Length: 136
View 1 (cartoon, rainbow, N blue to C red):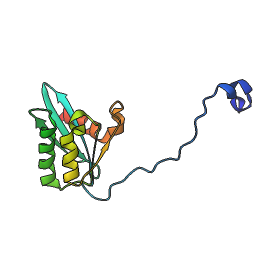
View 2 (cartoon, rainbow, N blue to C red):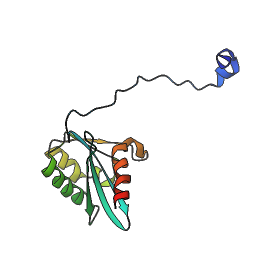
View 3 (cartoon, helix red, strand yellow):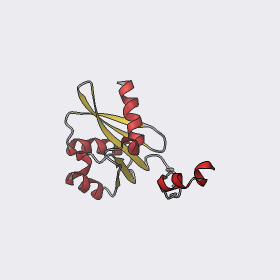
């Protein structure tokens, strides 16, 4: 109340317009949308693909971190679990390549990129990267 009645406080206070709270997206079935991320651990490269519905994740060792390797392992994952409606990732070069764009278009998968400099925006994948590191 003191801050509200203080003219100086009001003059320097940042105006932050209130944004409406966005409802959290809740998938309605397994493998509806997945989050994916690449990581380096103990001198090796890995990719995690996490199901947003169940929290189950697949872990793939990558011999190379090219788009082709990412796509090949996503195809393995989808052969087991089905093709998701959406893939989310941090927008790393493997996910922003022309080959990857063509892959998601051909397979009719929506691609959503999180902020590349804000890891929490791809929180599901980041969470399972940490879990995978503990298991490795």
